Length: 333
Ligand SMILES: [Zn+2]
Image 1 (cartoon, rainbow, N blue to C red):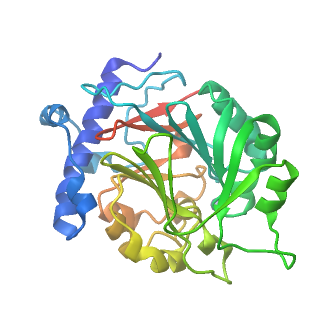
Image 2: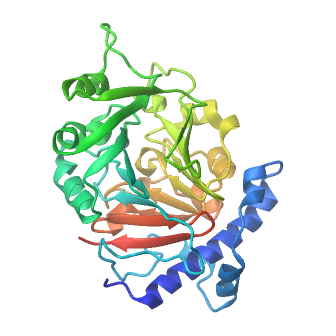
């Protein structure tokens, strides 16, 4: 384990500060949200926050955390917590999307990167000791999200493939995701807003909030959007949703701790009202290092989100939750 205990502690401090800071801003900006009200910082973590630590503003940059790199088998420990750990690894697949979600022996992927991502994906899954998947969610059938699906289905034991019911279909009623699932004889599950998918334990739940209306103009606006919730912590996955879909699901949204920023951070997504509604403490942009000036970071900075790029980590960004607090690590192969 290359990461130092000091680095882990600093990360815990940093996240705790952000949690505390965001709690204050949530209280100031959001009324009537039971979820925002329920986000708490454990007493032990609060003690950490009283020690010397970076200010939230210092954390809002593209290189905001310790540069110490952890090996994939680094065990993340939430101090003073015996709760099981939920982990979300945002894999560095360049300007594409893939997140690995693990709780106990259960593993899911949200999107599969591009076809070129497959070697990285396989390497990352091997590093995380993942040889089978409970399911793969495809947010929408663009090549930077669906590209790795055939390769993964051919190499791994995958139980189910999930996709939004509201999506583009061919005149014959099929689409790319359906075709691939059928080719590999995988069960396909169509998801609609309002659906919930618990892990084996009801403590961890996916909740689908979008899409709610078919958008004929832009396939990105038919992206599967869902929360992943564990205890008081909430992750929000958005695919490549742009402004139009944001507007249609706004009333279903509530504050999250971690936002997978939509459409690789492009300026055609993440509106001010969206950012003010979901109030992320951590905003992960899955992209390469190109065109950073074209990122819609203003709306995120205005709500004091800590913005992180997947390209900053060789393997990816690992965020873990014990249901109360979050820890962040940068993983190398
Ligand atoms: Zn994309």
